[in-house]
Image (cartoon, rainbow over all chains, first blue to last red; front, side, top):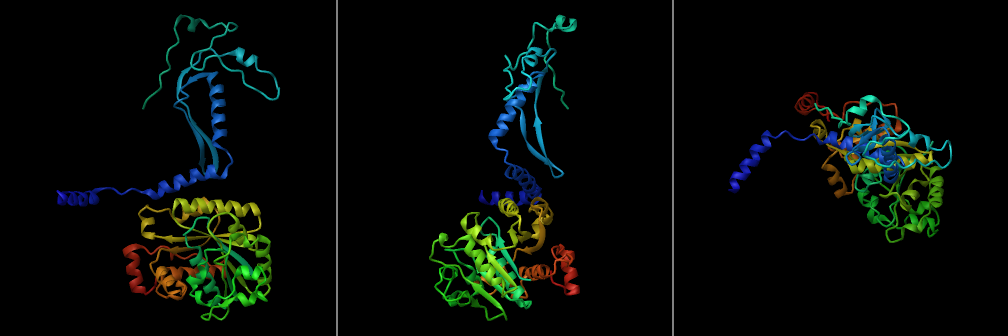
Length: 144
Length: 267
């Protein structure tokens, strides 16, 4: 039995394509150093994430549990990279939320939206005739 | 024009002491007047690597606290070279026995008489590091082709840059070219791009370094040591930064071996 395993390992060793871990090391290093060098704390990132969810949710329903966000780098410049799955693009958006927003008052606090994952309709903007007849459809994500 | 160079890394065990010993010996061999300072108070080792451990009478803290008449009394002369001296660290004292201003003052005094003052910095970024860099105007940052060593080196580069008075050099130690070729190790270009400081040298992994420290004789004196030869090039480049890079880092597998066999060149 033992002999079988040593033989098996030997054969495996011959055929296995060895991992190119040097590239991984380089990529991981570059990423971790972006965080090390900036003073952008995880707390700030979380706060930014929450703010972004609020803003984007005015226009579309997003899957905030599965969104990915982080600092990245490309050709030596820093970037904020985000992947945000869309559940549904809103047909109407809350003008009320925009209008209630105070003009240039410090500190600015975004008005809380009533429901993050449901379409927000307002009495002031009448839905167009198209949307009246058809119930809102779930936005299908395209798959490759 | 004398220079005070600190050899530092952040991470421990990357080869600061070996680099200090070899670069110092190489500069002395080239006819320079050199003092090596071991700034690793409480964990001195440069004396052992240099093979001078039996000749210590006074140490760095004795100099600072005035127990010897002049600092020259504490300098141990290395008889293998015309002008190479070691100022050993204190082994029993507490790290706080030295203050950055005192280190800077010692360096200032040594600068008047010697060409190169090379300081072996302790690992870490605390008090010992601050002491070691206090009197220096150049820094050699030693790193290994490994994520933790490069990350720590980046931290050191950041700390030195924030002081805005150092010229920095990168020394990549313990590289295994065979692994780099197979894509299994960080390559020089990656490391240099990430840290973004001028490259001073590349030292290959070499068993003979262990040999050298066993004997207490720097590898640069060993003509069969690949690392020793690489340190020779580091010293040349330190003395003349315009020396072009040759392909010594690439010893080219079988083809390179054949070429070396026929041309008689060493890798």
